[in-house]
Length: 154
Image (cartoon, rainbow, N blue to C red; front, side):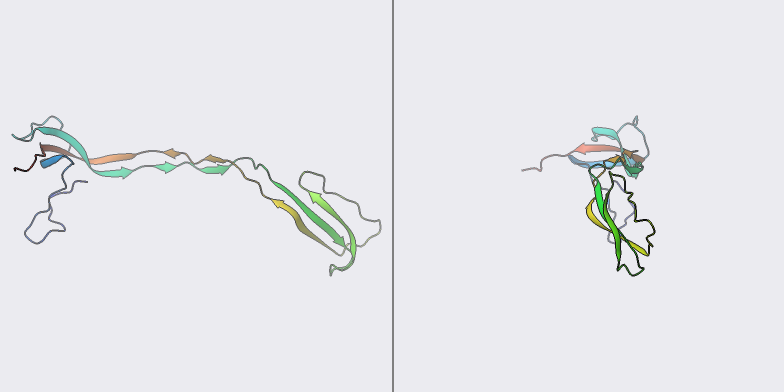
């Protein structure tokens, strides 16, 4: 990212120039998009328009869960005569893939009930949605003219 020559982070009285693009020894820049300008003598690479900053406009779409697969559960369901779960009237295993009804003895008083999982396999579901949309967009263009990097004299 290229920054203005504002002196931020520099010792008082000094100027901190922006970092050079890789492969270049010295660059001059002009804030804005000026692809047709002429570069100064000796600045043979350019003009190049680059971004001073970027704006992230990416977002993910809503996510959902597809149809559950591999799920199965069974529960031991009991009905009891008293309210303290002490006198059993009947019990039955009820599964998610079978009818769960059973008859009680006629004239039985129902005082309480209980259920406990015997099998609890939640399964899984495929992800639906959540696709990435949008892009990172360059903002605040800067036009560069650069001198190529040279080997130091020997």
